[in-house]
Length: 154
Image (tube, rainbow, N blue to C red; front, side):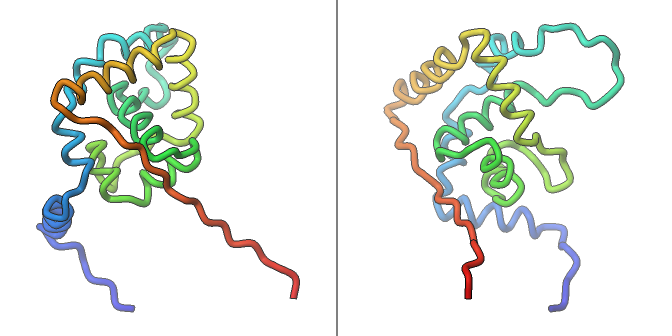
């Protein structure tokens, strides 16, 4: 198979086609005031860093949006990491580019645990659903089915 170089507008064209096909994540991204969650989410990173060495933590709003995707699609931590890497629509919803660093499953788990320890998970998700309800929307969560190939005896 011959590989061609990515054109200047190829990604934008693909995004436009997804939007035209009613990508529900475009609507979700637009309907929610994600920055309204930042003050509470910042509490997850209140612990002072001992040094500036190492990778910077991921943006808290990005991490919350990952938790929302995970919840809506009933995905495990490994499953959400895979889907973010695999699905253009997830990356676009999260504002990530192909070259961007993506949180791994352990990072997602750690962030959720910090929110749990601060008793913020239910509060944040209630506010998320409230924002949608004010606009006359309700979320119907779906499920992505993972498939596994298992070698069988011959």
